[in-house]
Length: 477
Image (cartoon, rainbow, N blue to C red; front, side, top):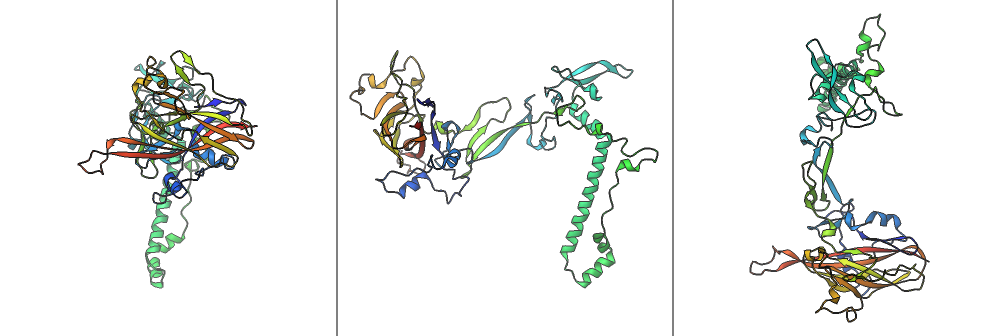
């Protein structure tokens, strides 16, 4: 999509997104067609963004066509800021296990199987049988081992009776620690305080503060409970015997803190976080734009409405093929100069299986004159024939078609579903990056019949789109 001009400035083609989905409501959203109807038909349309005076806004509103979506209900392009993301499924990136949505919260967004990360090198741990046996019966014990840094769970005293259900066994060991018991007790205390406070507030707001109500509170004892503070919380370690120092059984090692400087061999391994697949909807009509397969192993999409599959793709070619085995010379990539007219070739590619009527109009610019030599043309439909190298030929040089000499001056090349046109650019002032706004209007017949048409007629719906395209050509000296 990009070429390199003579001053080593990257030239590219960006598409403008109105971003009406995140700025306006459905009733107040103004499309490009509505904005053009307010202007004079003979005047040059005003570009929505000026690249020179509004670089920050241009960076937010202009995108490559590969990153844009297309809503076929609104007939508008949508960018990443115009869509709503929703989770389509959760899975573990290690074992590719599909986790139900109902159990994601209960599992703390982690894999509930034997998927753990090494606390030293973050490599995936494996469950292996330890060399020693536990107990007199000779029952084997299992540990988590890292094949990269040779760390295993015996360094922190973890040995498991079974090779399955490691997460459940770890939760039972953590629940038996004094720190976990103290945290559970503290959590229960504050929950009881919160319930008592909520009960007192609901009782005080349900009646008016009159003398009779105050008398009822005094007689029932609610007034004393609401005015008194809750009893202070006493840690379990302070209820030990006098000869045992406080917090002696709650050492800092029981909390399993990780050093901020890096991972330690005495740290506990963490469960692998779950990944999720996202589906995207249009922010205006909530139509689904992207919907992937819910299975973790699947890489396909059930719905994938990308702008590159519905709108013509505009590119700046390096060279144009003329026939089998021959190539035209590289296009003009000389530096742009003030007052010098430079021809610029734009190639339009049709991704649809139907013909597309294209109209190109140059936007209003202050310091640059732009002339589109061929403002209207028809893009041939896409066919699998054009994808075969053996049948790759120049349409303008085949019998029955106009030759390159007799063709119209604006169209410089035809091939398959691609047409290259030429525009004349004359800069009037120097700038660091010259961007030409082009209003591209395209219309085609929909493959599906129009459901609103009468049953007697077999007419098809005409789909029309109007998009702004910004062609960056580099610096002007």
